[in-house]
Length: 62
Image (cartoon, rainbow, N blue to C red; front, side, top):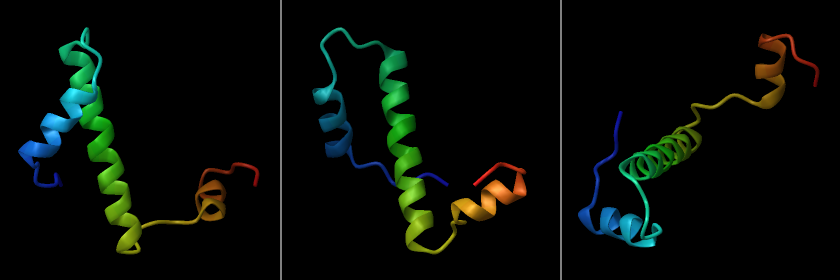
């Protein structure tokens, strides 16, 4: 589920990037921002699991 993009925010993201950025750099920045926004949304709505629960599921030490 993608969040609505605001043009002004997209412009700010591009303006903060180095002059020699590539399309791949831009796509990475967009992906990271969307992933962070999705994680924050999940956190706010309680769709998260604590670390102990995840480690137990995959048999990892605490």
